[in-house]
Picture 1 (tube, helix red, strand yellow):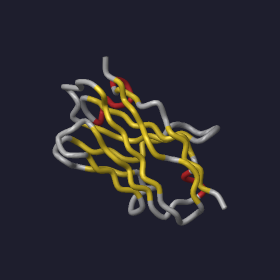
Picture 2 (cartoon, rainbow, N blue to C red):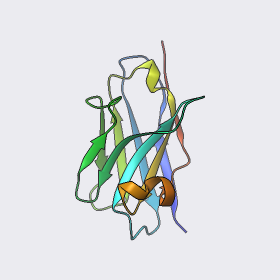
Picture 3 (cartoon, one colour):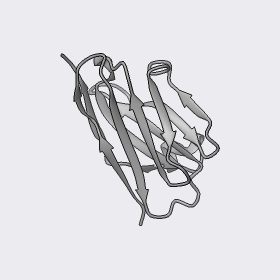
Picture 4 (cartoon, rainbow, N blue to C red):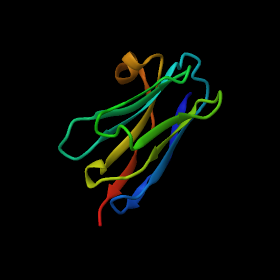
Amino acid sequence: QVRVLQSGGGWVQPGGSLLLGCAANGSIVRTKAMGWYRQAPGKERELVATITRDGNTTYSDSVKGRFTISKIGAKSAMTLQMDSLKPEDTAMYYCNFAPSVATMDRLGSWGQGTQVNVSS
């Protein structure tokens, strides 16, 4: 059985940085895309960053230039480096492994979520 484990998160002041990590414990043979979603209270879930097996990345406009998604070698693992954080980045962040970016929402394996709070 595949388990997806997240790490990182916490509280930071505006302008600060946080690093989130995510790794799959088990075999995700069909994984060709990984990504990070977030959901703030009262808001819809937002896809903020994706990376494919060959290293192609995408970012939502809200985080472009501030967040960096990276995969760790050939492993089913990745990080999300978050810089210049803003209060509006406050949310629960979830990682996801899927056969493709297009199927992440429907077929992906999800991490347990980690809270990020940005406030002074």
